[in-house]
Length: 112
Length: 114
Image (cartoon, helix red, strand yellow):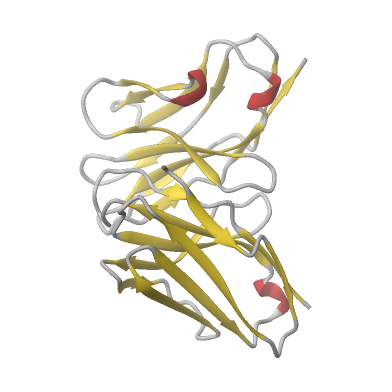
């Protein structure tokens, strides 16, 4: 069965510092991996995805993610965090039916 | 236009009421989804429509009844709900079910069952 895990419930970062939000996956076959962000009382916004090709994927708002097959990880990164990046982040893997299987979410808090 | 719209934004209903949630997209997507989300938890898939036909029902209670009248519109009819059904209901769409494209989410309807 496909699954993703986000090992950290919360990540705290100072503004201007680099941020990393971790995600590991367990799939059979090649994974389709996604990152979404959710601001309070809003729907989910797509940030980026890995389907195939380059292991470093660039997405919206300066975010990027690195696909690592040997470590089965797909960590989300940003070189310099902004206070406005504070939100709930979800990693997801798509199963063969098109269903998104989400991790439990990581709350990112960026302090000035 | 990459927008999915949902109405209403907020809904309060009693356990004996009948109400409907509406979702619309004009991106030409042929797959549409309903999710339920509790606070600070990941969305849980409820239903998937592919080319206006119900493709996936994740064992959702019959008090939730989905409908896809056309390729742009998705409804969720609610009847005799329970207080534990209070949640954020999210609609999403994608080009086709099962492909590699991302799903686009609407802002959600915040449902409170009293």
